[in-house]
Length: 372
Image 1: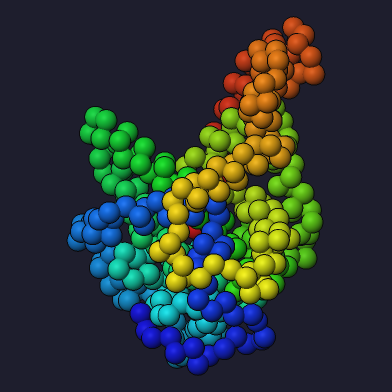
Image 2: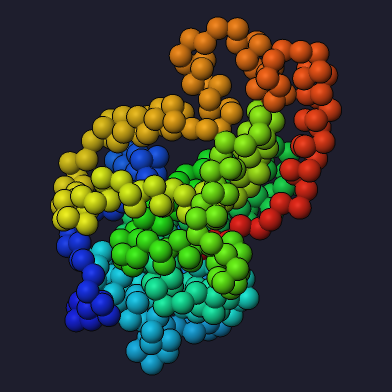
């Protein structure tokens, strides 16, 4: 990493958040997990010890030897964006950034001792300047939150799971950890999307970038409002079978679905929390040491309770009904799972057959998820 003297300022007037804590933009579930980890005695020591086992040094040498390092001499526009992002989020040191030849639009922030940002040529060629600025801010947000450490662990364990798949129960134990890490990382992506918006300070550009990642460089053929409508339809459509399939589809992913990310970011951009940050009212880094684990978990629990209460998803609605003491639980479960309006024989008979067909459809041809 190189020192950031903050001599470079953003190319257009953008608000700077001096001393901002990552808690300002972190998703409640992401934040509670990180606060708890950081409070664990010896946590840093354990991860430093693991650094000797992880191929981090090898990765650094690989990127140095087989990618292009962003600097004042190479990819200067990305270098300016990177310094701008660090200036806005007040990150003291600028992480090394590399451009890797890969047609798949992708970006990541990895590293145990120091974060490294990597973007692919596919992503650079896909996005315009303001869209790319949001992505760079997204990755700098990962660096500020300390996500690169856990991302590196996830990469290592995922590779390890493949190598020990032949060992009885060995793969099961590792995949249990990987599944938990993926769930956390999906929430961390929502946090980093918010950081990208704070850096770019252009909601439309952030929306366009996510839409392009989903549909490619055909912006004239796409519409942000229609794209956001997809997320709404995805959340509320179908019955309990669809809710289960959504869970199964997302489990192997490290990232939330792109339309869902766009809807989450749009919602946050219109929230009071976002406006308070833009007005200069946000938690400072110097206050992080006084952060309460209990308060963070309470906030996370409150967020999930609110999510269940307001969700349009059939499964979440059922959970809300159960929590609210809804009567005739068996009937409600049957009707919601079969999509039937009533408890007739037709709905009950179609349930198993429909579930099987839908299940086979949902588990085949699962798309690869980008790591931006």
